[in-house]
Length: 329
Ligand SMILES: NC(=O)c1ccc[n+]([C@@H]2O[C@H](COP(=O)([O-])OP(=O)(O)OC[C@H]3O[C@@H](n4cnc5c(N)ncnc54)[C@H](OP(=O)(O)O)[C@@H]3O)[C@@H](O)[C@H]2O)c1
Image (cartoon, rainbow, N blue to C red):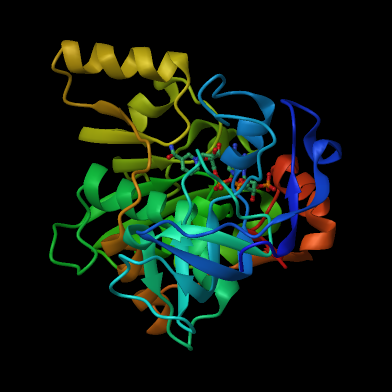
């Protein structure tokens, strides 16, 4: 592929939102020893992609401009690096590209073999790509942080999932119900039936007083909260938690970090745990298998061609996606 050009979408400074994206022709990247080159079939967007463009992680991310954003991709292997052992040309895969490199809004991308997993024919490229940041975050929050066993071998736990209609939340509801859980979920009024259909036992409209207070309609106290919505004060969580209840906060701000430190220092039984997703191929493989077996689904909010990537970008920035926003080259 050396010397061949591809269509890509990039930005060359912080800010600008969807209008800051530019369509360009750039060389197809060459895989390093431990990388595969993919012809992309689907890329999904996550809020972190446009937050990096906004500059929330400056000066670390992006490491340089111009930057081709997005990390969650599925496609076909078209070239392999000399050290790649597990993949061959023609394999269908799903890969995480890392935020420092990005590269997902393009026709081709290089991915580390270590963060690449085979995609069976039963799982579409869009369904697989959705599982990366959003699915892995839901999985990590439930299993590692909240200690929920997804094979139902654990004790019964009451779990609250906020923003259950979003990318992370819709996977979290479904995964939580693979375990021995009672799930309360919050979402907007328009999505209450949808979130129930994912398996939630009770659903709260976040715009009502009960929803704002996060009160379980059945009076349950939560053993774990998977918090995917914007910041909520500890004083709102606290009365709703069981004796050793934990809030797993995937959107921690300064106040949440301070609360977390304070709860640790005071040996509080109720804890606030900030979460940063660490991608693991083994967990991705588990999620792909759940989709293959029909135990987990990727709900698609909308699909956009790469030529209209700014529509997808604006949709994600709007904050009202139901499930995942997909871009297809
Ligand atoms: N820490 C990490 O490693 C990590 C990983 C992944 C994501 N995140 C963060 O987690 C957050 C969620 O990500 P996402 O991909 O799930 O976002 P998303 O897909 O954009 O979430 C949109 C959904 O959230 C719902 N929503 C918004 N505010 C709500 C509220 N107060 N209560 C209930 N529902 C609400 C919206 O419903 P309506 O349309 O009805 O308003 C919409 O369906 C983002 O801030 C993201 O950056 C962090």
